[in-house]
Image 1: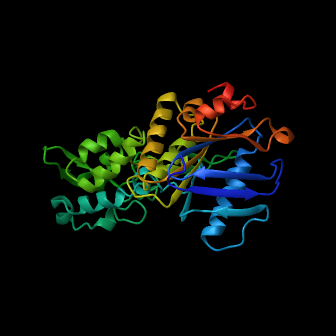
Image 2 (image 1 turned 135 degrees about the vertical axis):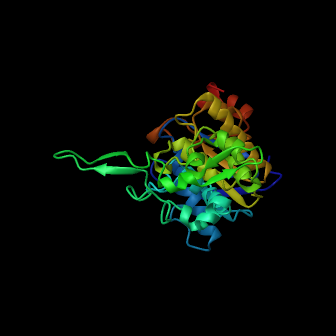
Image 3 (image 1 turned 180 degrees about the horizontal axis):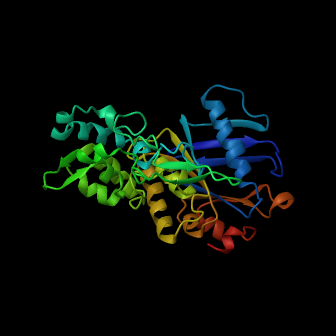
Length: 331
């Protein structure tokens, strides 16, 4: 279990969590379990993450952290469910670094060259081809007397963010299909993969989104409106495929609101990260995720004052055979 190394943490008491000493195996999927209020979040998000960050950057450890050994970890990546940005101009395509590539491709078309358009003109933030009514946001705000303002889809571009002129610039694929950038932005990832078959870089980035179970999202969808689970997986898009042996990924209850099929996709994502050398820690209640863990740290035995200790640590089989573990009764 610890053949690839171990992260060691020792803490004094904090909140309802008693003094603890834990070891986390590197290059494995570790799930931190326990009833609500047992100290999972305190252990991971208030002790381990800030302790590691302090040790990595040569800063003073948090007061309650006695010692920490990163054992080669140089990056801690907290993948939480917080919304991605607050700007409606942030879309799935811009966040996944696809939009810039698409703008270059459309600027290189005969239509664009004839009209004198450059890649920057296809930006719906600042370009000439953005909708003049909504300024490229895709929506307008109506001032309703005595009530909060109401956001509606832009009547000019119907939410596409682009002026009519952008719809006159077409790319013709090798298969003979013609489409404009506004049409492409209105496609979901699965459909766009076929449309962008001629462009290896775009196809590779869209394939990552599909593998993360996000194939149903449209390229022009606003990122602030994504669910917590969608936001978590989109944040991972830029991490997939890289060597990650010095990276620790931390997920805080990533299965909340997910369909069981999406949980299986998430488990596949964890496996891919681990195959690239990453260490993954997940705070979780979902039994499918818990059963798939390499290593479990079970907090408890109860919540609040009745919790705050490590009841058991080991493989799912060890937890299953620990009588004091509430988690063990269910796995």
